[in-house]
Image 1 (cartoon, rainbow, N blue to C red):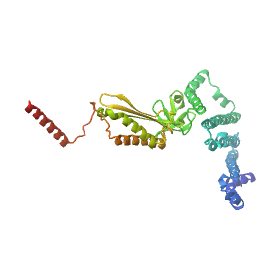
Image 2: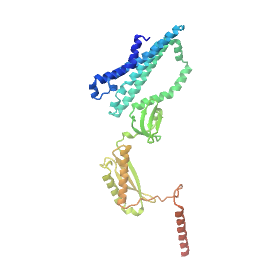
Image 3: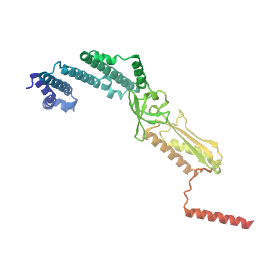
Image 4: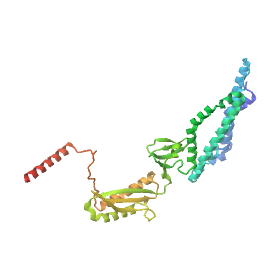
Length: 375
């Protein structure tokens, strides 16, 4: 038969939260009218803590019963297993609860509205708190086990000089990655949610900055995990931090239109100015449409614009598209044709049909015969 203490723990473990929910919905309707659900109330938080503590107590009580059965069965020197289990479980549970309500986690929602360095500071506080919380928990576990295991546990930590060297070499890379994660979180290179481009060609959105690795989600929805030790030695471009972006195009026109190029340049510039509101045209940033070069088979016109948005997202894509539409409209308005490449390429593909090839061969043969007859 269960003792009185066991009955109390069983009641707290199984019925505490359901009874609290009933009372909350029955007698605290004024909170429900404000839209505060039971799971979001302080009452629920307190009762949940009591229920979890009672469940751990029941587990320790179960081990206590096992000890009694062993002693009744004639086993001697039965260790106080229930006490060891209770101490380990309660210390771990307290550490997990503290981590859940740590400073950084409680202010994550608020940090989203703050500046980037504030969000990074939250991440640093979370990482440091993790280190200390689980470090203290490890020492508590060691202390509890040393009380019961004596010199047995101490001998595990009594490593020789060779063992210490081996352990140091084995954890060297791990330590570099961990320090790299802390350095990234404390720096202003990028934060979670930023769109970045790395020197090795990796481009994407930062999904997580961990102790050892940083996860980046690319445009193809694939997530790449990069060791923090590599990120500390690579060039990083944070595209989310940029207030402006560039759109640059090189246009080709025939030499037959050389006299009309200045008018075309002015028309393209005016068309972009009037139809692309995102383009900076107040003189604070470059806005150029110029005849830039004479090439062997064409005249070259360069278009260089700055947009009032970072080079990411739908807004940038639509603004870039509007510039291309404006260029095409101006070229059509001036009745220009783009010059096609006339150079010879090694790896070209002929997509002509067989009939077109036969017709071309016939025309070439007729032209050759005409030349021969004339001569």
